[in-house]
Image (cartoon, rainbow, N blue to C red; front, top):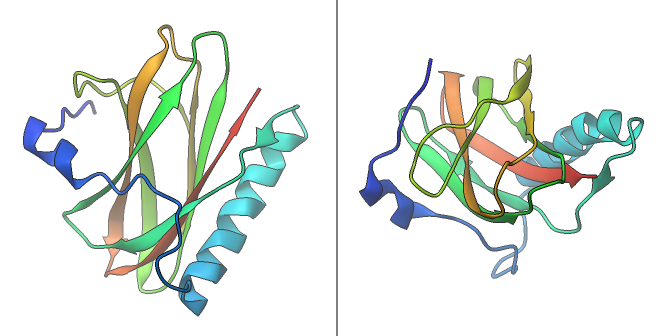
Length: 144
């Protein structure tokens, strides 16, 4: 199912990894899960990018992260979440808000989306609760 995000949602971007506060235990656990997923892609030559994005994601709301991607590279965006999140999803949108086609990995509170952009530019990664309640999440990405 394809979704387009309304333009107004672009202003909700979380895209910074500058720590203003210490990460919670839940965010640390979510990061461990995200790194576990990303580690599987390193077996295929992907490098895990330094930095990560952590926060809280609520049902029916999107946690959005803006990223600059380059044509010719391949990317995997991996996310881990904590209880009470039961199922999490990752989607990628181009600069116009159109969802791009990705390969997907879904395993309850862990998920990943991978693709190769045809054009360099800014993309938005959306983290969504599919099932369960509000919980902490962490997003990391890999490239080659």
